[in-house]
Image (tube, rainbow, N blue to C red; front, side):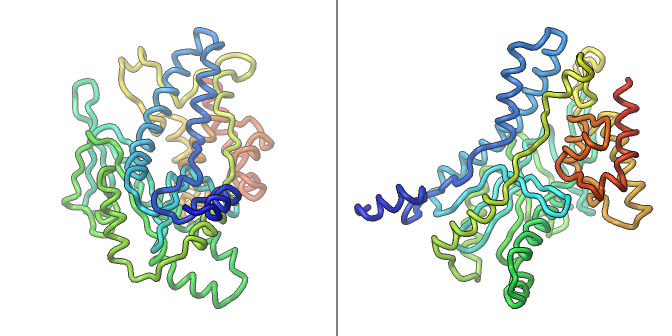
Length: 356
């Protein structure tokens, strides 16, 4: 590298002549949460520590899955830009994108799943997880990560369209969006057995294991008919998304000390009561109650369920346990319109479980 290039790289903080992955945004909300819990654990009362310890374990497990993906990307020697843990907002909705990978040919939106147990996708595209539950095999449906990533893609499209004032550029973006932005679900747990025999082709084509990611990217690059983006354009796009990133405003430590004392969270299940069973947040009574309310309300209004609130927002509600509309407004995605339409009902549901 010449003196001019070295100086340019120092000033712009961007590598000149991109020859390997550049983790342009590498920080993670989950890691920040884990650090906060570790600090809290050191000074927390003994009665709180088991719950904090379990939360730390679950966070660490999720982080490990994303780090497996980062390892694969880091060792790929591909000229790509990687944005990790990108949180976007648009019109009261939010999306947490695990990885956005910018290549010379396309952008890859990666949803990373580090799942316990084995996974099957049936002919209807439904995801079924099989777990070893107290020595017995248990099957349960889980929310489709393909559908989850569709929401992420829709938000990216809306944000990109909003940035284009020229009608011709907007029309071009609409026409070629699906060619340039691709979706993939990466299953990061190497022990997970995946059964896709009956899965629809459009679903099957989006699901890969962590160790298949690099070959998947290389194949898409080879098959792409798109023109190659310049390095300058790649970083321009990266700057666009990094500029839109919003920090998660939810304080996940508040749930351990509600009302001046400790109140057990519905998201964490006591090991003794459940005899060592691994119960996820999706199985807790409050989560199910909020999900049922969302389903019934969306049916009544004839809209998609996630327009009311998405799964990440359910988790945020459980973490914050809002007691008023003012507290609800502090949660990302709950603006004035949503609070006015659904706020009282949400607070009532949460209140029922705070009293338990």
